Image (cartoon, rainbow, N blue to C red; front, side):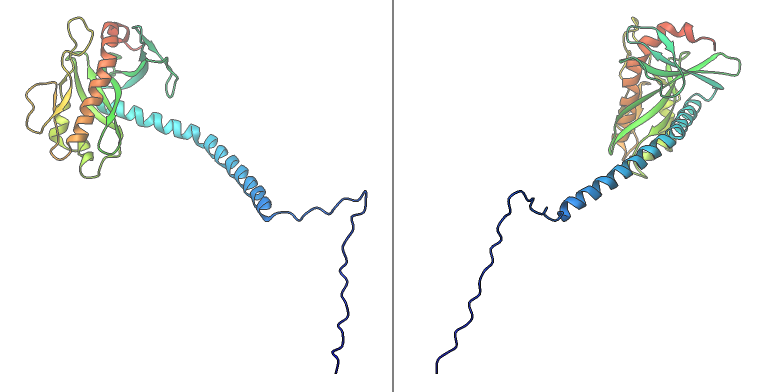
Length: 247
């Protein structure tokens, strides 16, 4: 018995017709996703910029308030303050309050006045690397004794319960009742380097008795004061008469 033959299947091969455009391939899911992500990113960027612009003034105001509070803390007799810069070539110049741009190399400071308008002291910021991050401090300077009369912390991220003792340790804070920052006779630099020494090893009025267990943070405070005072005081002292009375 013979097997029936299978019907032959003819393949139909499409022939391109001259002058016709082949159909476009379907859109890639990846391309669509990229377009969507681009749109979302643009919208998020606009939201972030808008939020920054809307909160900038409030952030600047809060920063200014925090700075002013630090000045009044380190110079207790102060009733009003004015912002100045010590210029690289010498001389001092009054500037507007807040984040006023200053000339390269200029050092910003605050002149503080008592209720009668008399100069009560100078406040300036300084910073140095601590254990976790930069420790930024504000210190008060009295021209009468040529000494630091108080400090406050502007910003730091030291270990809670250890590094932050610089805010609470009474013995450490006592270093700044009259920390010697006198200049040499030619007013070119500090007569002695301000630095922290091992706890209990302080022998001179320009040394800082470090906190036991927080030596690194203590040294950061000393270096911050030393570096800032070295930059500011040689320019400031010859011009103190320009700050003598509130203008």
